Image (tube, rainbow, N blue to C red; front, top):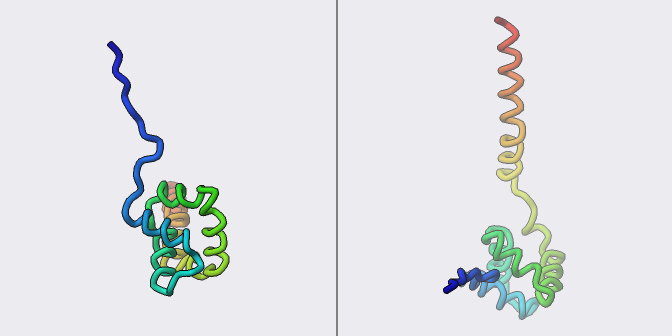
Length: 105
């Protein structure tokens, strides 16, 4: 007797992902609030769900058109730039300080 353990390679989308998918299907016939919803999902949504929508052949063209029409919505903010600098330079500065400090003894 063998038992198969099932694995669904495409689990169901969340409500937010389904909403974004619906809006992308009718894009560019969306209002400003719906543009905000699409942009928020593409920037902040779960990576796998965003990837699943953007890799769909039928939606890839719509996503590309959306990103081309609204490039400012996908730029990093000053806070995000500072966070990247801190994450990259912070450990480097700590390492340099430790090396400098170890030479004094």
